[in-house]
Image 1 (tube, rainbow, N blue to C red):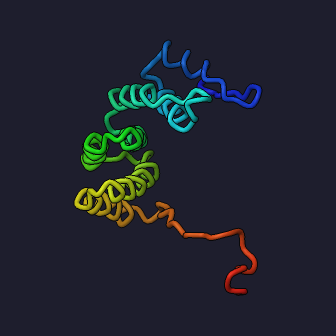
Image 2: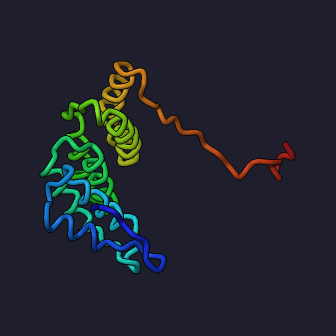
Length: 164
């Protein structure tokens, strides 16, 4: 099983590590993506490890070069490591992926995130290409959710500055 169990407030990664050791290609690298994401998001004091996350995402991409989630997460961790050229190169690879039906929503969501990341690192042309690919997916599949972002300030109620 690829379950992550919670023990004493921290996530136990042993099950994922065992799954990767026994069948690294299981579920097209899902265990690597999950463990890599945990290592990326955790602070280093709690076991976070960017180089280990990179290795896991690279392994997942090697197993499944069309895994948009692994590609985006790899680009994101490269950007955090100040490797913007590598991040842009990985996001450019996302343009070559032709998502299968089962991965359409995930692909659309990862393209949305990649659009923002490419803009933040100043790759406007890449961002536009990613946006075109995402728009084509949305146009071709009306059942996909757009996941439109809305900026929200505060938690509702009266704005203390304006009284509105």
